[in-house]
Image 1 (cartoon, rainbow, N blue to C red):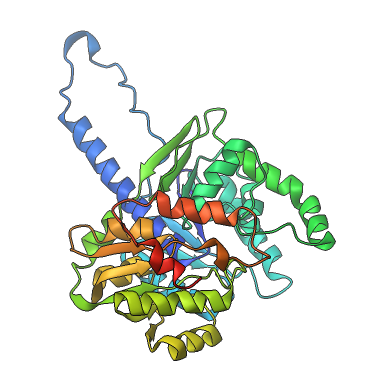
Image 2: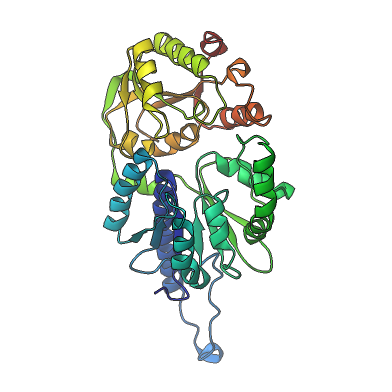
Length: 388
C-alpha cells in the first residue's frame, strides 16, 4: 500500500516510461543538491537556538528512497508491449517498483484497473502521468483532488497539451478529426470526465503542476517547467560507435491518417537517394505491410527497435547523420546525443502529402515541430519536393 508521500507514475508507452526514469533521476539529483546545501548552512547560536527552521519550498514530494511506484497500462500492440517490458526491466534495475496493469483488451479490463488503482491514486503525491490525453488516465485523475501532478513527455503531444490547456479547450489529440455522429455522442457523454481532468491539470489553489519536458513550451501561470535533457540516458549508455551511413527514423503519420501512404513511400525513397540512407528505424506503430513496401521500394534495411530510439541511438552503433520527419526525436535526440558528433536532420512534410482526412491542425502542428527544434539541420526544400 502507498504511504501519503509516495510518488505514483501512470504510463502507457515506452517513451513515457523512459521519461519517468529521467524525471526520477533529475529529482534525485535536485534532492541531493538541496540536502547538501542545507547541510552546509551553519546552525545559528544564541537567540535562534530551539526555533524551528522552515523547510525549503519544494514543487512536489520527493521520490521514496527505494524509488517510484510505476504502473504500466500497456496498449495491445505487440511492439509497444515488448518495448515496455524492456524499459520496465531497466526501471527495476534503478530500484523502482513496476506494476503491470491491463486496462485494455477486454470489456471488463478498464473497470478492473480502475478498482485496483483508485485508492492508490487518492493517496499518491505526486502523481506522474505520461499522457494527459488518455481517457483512462483522465478517469484515474478524478479522485486525485489534492495531489500535485507531474506531466512527462509523450512526444510532441506535450506542445499541444500546453496550448489547449492555456486556451481552456477540451483536451484532444492534434491529429483527431471531428468524427461522425456516434463519435460526437461519445465525446459529449465523456465531457464531464474530460473537464474534471482538465481542472486537475491546471495549477490552482496551491496545487502544483510540473511539466518535465524536452519540448519548446511556455509554461502556464503557476506551472513549473523542468528540462528533460536525458541526463539518465547519457549517464547509463554510450557514447555510441558511429557508422559511416545515414539512418532514417520512421513515423506513424500514415497510421494516424495524416499522410498519404504512397506520398510517404516516395518521400522515403527520395531521402534515401539524396542522403545515402542505409537503415530505416521503424516506429513501433508502423504496420508490417507498410514496412515491406518501403523495403521493396528503397532497398533499406528495416530495423524494429526493442527500446525507445533515444536509448538505441545512445547505445549504438548509429549513423553519423539521423534524418527524421517532424517528430519527437528531432527534439530529444540532440539532448541524448550531445557531444557524440551525430547530426540530427529534419525533413519537412510537404502539404501535398496530407490526406483529405487529415485534421485542419495537422499542417501547422507539423511545421511547428520542425521550426522549434534546436540543434538540428534542416534539409533543403528540394528533398521534400522530390516526393511531391
